[in-house]
Length: 344
Image (tube, rainbow, N blue to C red; front, side, top):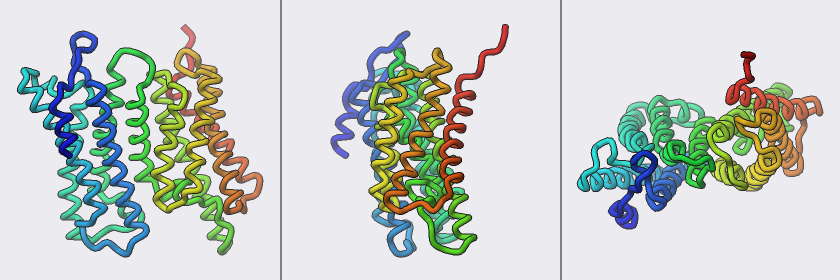
């Protein structure tokens, strides 16, 4: 923590376009690392709820990692703002552009944490799906989204078209926030495609959940990627980092470590598609093709690994259809990101 406060004492500004204040590299990387600590604490707490005996108290080591991460982000941003105000910066310039909402998110997270504590004391510790959709946790979800997207907002406002690594990690943390609250049907958390035993109705439900999980994860992942491509060009390795970091967090929840390489290799495949086609708003056809081929490659790889490690009892119509549907979702999302041209 002392190192964090020492970093806050340095000048966190440089002059950007039009005299606007932008964060230094040191400032931006500090925020990224603290946000990674915060999001890792959320996943660690989820792991504890899945693998340890019922947690009957709000005060646990896992909550401590989560809330100390939040406090570290809050302390760093608040101290930076106060010290830059003391140097003559106005309230609107106390933090680099894009980080004001992160500070608001920290305050909102603290409020949500207090509400969550009293909620647990009144209604007990939620388990399973109830823990993901409880109102205090949804408030924390909103706060997390505001906090971790600071580096992405900052990069968006700066000139230049190449996405910095800090923006890629920020986007991955945003994706991880979404998948955290969708973990009950995440392919890397619950590989429903490998369910082969049970009653006929159980197998049917597993098939439905398996296909829905692939569809939802495709929509979330492609939504983030297409959002980035609407503004930036992505250096090679960006998608490997983005998807791999998210996959590492998801795969650790149920300790499906053998599935984490699926995310890493899937991200690498997506990087190769982007390198080959160079999709973007000015290359609409390439964007459409990449948005179709990328999800097909990732979902095919996932089902192949599940087949090799667990075995898939799905008929060919089911697994092949789910692969094509994932490609269709990517294609349709690309139509929302870059709309077809209308005649003059």
